[in-house]
Image 1: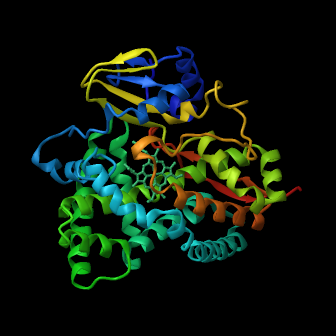
Image 2 (image 1 turned 180 degrees about the vertical axis):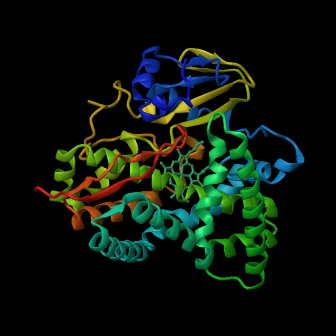
Length: 398
Ligand code: HEM
């Protein structure tokens, strides 16, 4: 049985996930009260099966959880058709490839400005933190700009988001629960006020677009719009920060891969980014609930039972990937499912890929010889897998 909160499992979950895959079918996990689908075929089938839905069941139905609960039950991610279809169709235009491509010059500019700050830091201290100085500010600034979240309040986003997503771990502490409630209240109130404001004075941002949709009578209420904005602000950076950090640490620990990328960073960026997401996936587990009895990998999941799709495990499946335990930044094809599959497939995947395929080569081109100056610090959860700190500096002897 897996203990999802065990620190040695969190440090390196892959040996236990490999054992789990050896069963060759979903396995019932008494601890979490759900089936675990660990092979590529099963994890993928879970995400695509229409009798398995994302059904948000409040863990705590009490009044004090009100905002936390509707921020989830009314968001795109936690809805199923027809509501999911309505919400998603509103957003697809804003996130299609062409629209995202039009953001490229802004992302290049932001990357350059972060690199200038890093240069100053390196000059002063000889080191910087890949997370706080680079991986985090870029996606936060991009998603904030896309939604039209005010610059001066951008610093609020990451703490609110972090407090909310800590609830996605299997067994959140009392303290985490309190912080999540507080953040949900403040965040919902803030976005609500912003929407009221934008309705009066619309801009060209996504919050203005969404704020005016409600008036067009398209059958979306204020809660659904606020919940979806907050989902975008959170999902728009959490996994990107972690995906970059996880991949970058793996690269630093494999100097031959780092050197390979440094030879042609811009040419190899796209395959490297997908390998980052495959190799140590930033989102490891997504739950579904059966709305009817359904068979997955030879196992019957009864109506009302839960099953989890283990994305990071699927992406290490030896039945699909050649030498899965090796990082190969030139891997192609790379059918990784780190962005999910089926109707909830990540709407931000083109944006995340673009951000990383600009920022990663820019960092490597500027610093072709970085190394860790102390052990990177892991975040304590499994579901959202990432690093808190990745301190790096120039290699001295090469
Ligand atoms: C490396 C970065 C990212 C990864 C690995 C990732 C991964 C995922 C995954 C696995 C899902 C599916 C969840 C499920 O099936 O239950 C998802 C959904 C979603 N993602 Fe991402 N994501 C990333 C970046 C982004 C960005 C930049 C945005 C910005 C808008 C975003 C917005 C969303 C939204 C709104 C959904 C819900 C879609 C739906 O329910 O229809 N993601 N993401």
